[in-house]
Image (cartoon, rainbow, N blue to C red):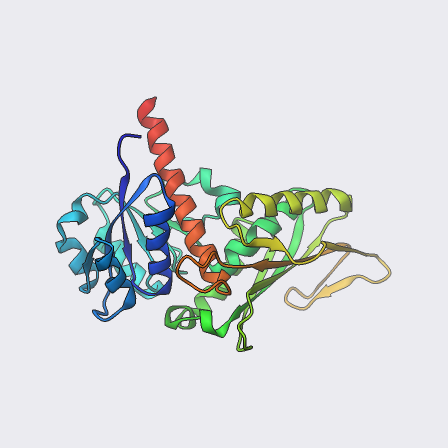
Length: 314
């Protein structure tokens, strides 16, 4: 391509700043044009200014007043679910594509390794949540072999990597992630739990994925999970299995009762244990929960640009 596509980041906190650094130093197709915040003293705005990026502490109004706003084609929103609703409304009709890193879920859920190609033209795509980005691919992989009746995930992250935005969106996190397990992962019923771990030194993000499925060949499930882990690791290098996939039969003599559904199931119980270590571009390496979000958002933007290039060549 002859020139890079200009992008803006709204939200100058940890996620927005990490995303800015990824765009500046690790993207060959995107150009970082504007960093937007509401705190004039934020480190993100200070770093952006030092790196030659246009900045404003005036929020969405300040962004629209920047000359570069007319040149941007993609906007990453790393604010909060409540703020994103207003940002989406204010940016509508401007020919922009929004990549939403909040749990607002205005647009379709997108997990790059699973369904990105289905939504490349959507005006607003939602990156679900850190737990969703880590676990939905696993549920989809298991579901490619056997129907997943029930999927439950537990995302454990360091308290240090849970900033004000994460803490303010806990309810949205659980609701959005559970829905993503169903809509994108294909589970009949999804449940999500997040744990803020105060351990010192901080622990990296760890995720447990529990699925109850129809009967199937266990080796096929293991192969599908391992292939999916490799796919996600292509854009999130710190994403890996913590231990071997565990599969147990659930027989008619001892059916498994799922309290949330008040039903008994017979088939397979599949347990997958994951670890996500951050790339430490801006955030500490233990903050894999934030790194997987920014990495997934970057992958989404670059694929959108690639789609435009293919369309223009055609």
